[in-house]
Image (tube, each protein chain N blue to C red):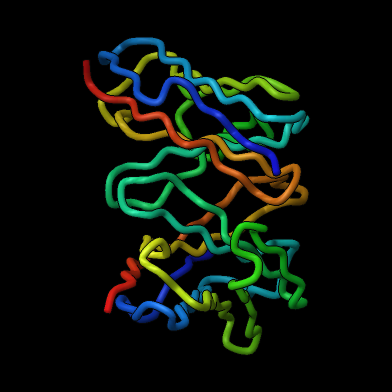
Length: 123
Length: 106
């Protein structure tokens, strides 16, 4: 079955760019009508949807983060990536990648999820 | 933006109890709602999508209902493995999560 795994630096300095990659295994990122998604969760708090990319490269972002976020896809590596620019301490969070299933036969929901990777913004 | 509001924020219950969590959308989202369970240190797990469709492998004691703006997640008989935090999420427009409901032991 499809599995997702996040990777990237666990520590980022304020004002710099956070970069993470999600590697998809057990299936092709290019197959099916799925949105490849990033979600984050600050310590002790709730979940925040960041945005998604389709295998064609089409993206959609949370309006609250839109100006700082870029999500891209590399179908040759079966990976998709997240970049958040000009980070502050408020961007400290567990970052998850997940598959969004908007169409038949699933009609919704994020599944599966990666295990998550903690990113701390600190000097 | 569509806002999602869950209630209660925390719920104390005992094994065997029937538990109900409510989620309200700031505007109609039709049936485009999912529910997740999250345990400490773990990624969320999808329980229900399209408001009432049980994800494969999820125990039948979980059920979802609602349409439009008001939705509920019900656990018919709470089991020890069910103590966790539950989130609703809309997917009519962009994606938004509720703030979560923690179910702990009474």
